[in-house]
Structures are given as structure tokens and as C-alpha cells.
Image 1 (cartoon, one colour):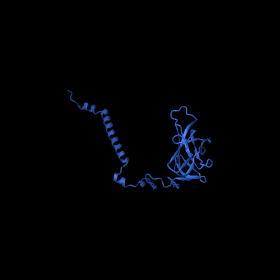
Image 2 (cartoon, one colour):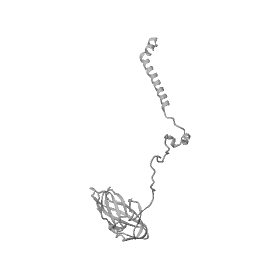
Image 3 (spheres, one colour):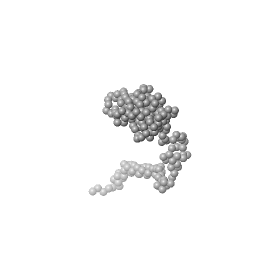
Image 4 (cartoon, helix red, strand yellow):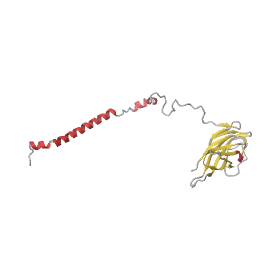
Length: 220
């Protein structure tokens, strides 16, 4: 076995060994520096107790708004919501499909709702320019007698085209000629209608439009 001499020990700790030692010490110093920097800049979390006592408004300086409320600078609406409006020949009304309007005629009143149009375009290719579409008009809380005639309903689409639909009962039979006091009654208003927006107008006397429902006809 060779006994290390002073010269071999010097070779073992020569320039190469010293360089490796310097790299190791430098790496340790760099790691310590990074840990110190992270500790200095990391966000400080508050305890749950302090979070529960902080007011939501304190999160944004200069604002009185709280979470879930509208900003105070927005204009306040003065139009009541959830109301049921009245319409007559003297005061016609423009509604959106699904809205209920209490319609007053010379022969009676009725709470009237129009929904639709519905169409069955699923699987059709190519899609036709005009497709059978159906509106459902419901009358309830009727007092007196409301005349129902096909010519009382007219549809005008977004291009100004005028349609004269067919009117039938909710079961597909002949539509009633009058809606009288009693249980709610539904009728179907059917027409070959183009895709797009428009207006379903109802003129109980065939001349004066009392209410119109805005609609959008979409093909699937």
C-alpha cells in the first residue's frame, strides 16, 4: 500500500479541488440569497379572524360599493319591473314575446300572452327560406267576449314582409270565434315564416292594432 506523501496530498487538493470547493460554496451562498429575497417579497397572509373583520369596501379605496352590489355611479332605473301593462286601441303596447298584456277591447278584457315562434328545422339540409312556424297565444282572466278572427293577426318581419297566418285551436282544430269569461284558452297562430326578427300584431277589430309582440325566429 502506498503511503500518501506531502506532495500527493498537495496534488489531491490542487487547483481542480479548490475550484470544485469554490463552486460548492458559491452555490450555497446563492441559495441562501434566493431564500432571503423570497422571504422579503412574498405576500403576507392575514389570519382568518382578521379577514372576517375587514370590510369589503376597504379592499378598494375611494369606493363605497360592496361585493354583489352595483356601483353607486350607475344611473338608477325608474321603470318598475315585474309589472303587467294595459293596452287598448287608444294606448297600444309593444311587448316582447312571453310578456302578458291586459288587453281592453270594446267587448271585454283579457290577460293575453304570446310565445314563439316554434319551428322544426332539426336535421333539415339545406334549410328552406320559409319554414312553418307557430305562435301560441293564451287568454286568461277574460271578462266579456273577445272576438277571434284570422285577419286579426298579422306578422311583419324585419324586411317589411307581411304575413297573414292561419289561426286554429291549441289542439289543431277550428279556432273559437270568441274568447269568453271562463277558463284560460290558447290558440295557435301558424305561418310559413322566414328566419329573423319581426312583430306579431293583434288587432281584435281587424283594424286597430292593440298589442304587438316582438319575436326572433331561429332555425336550428
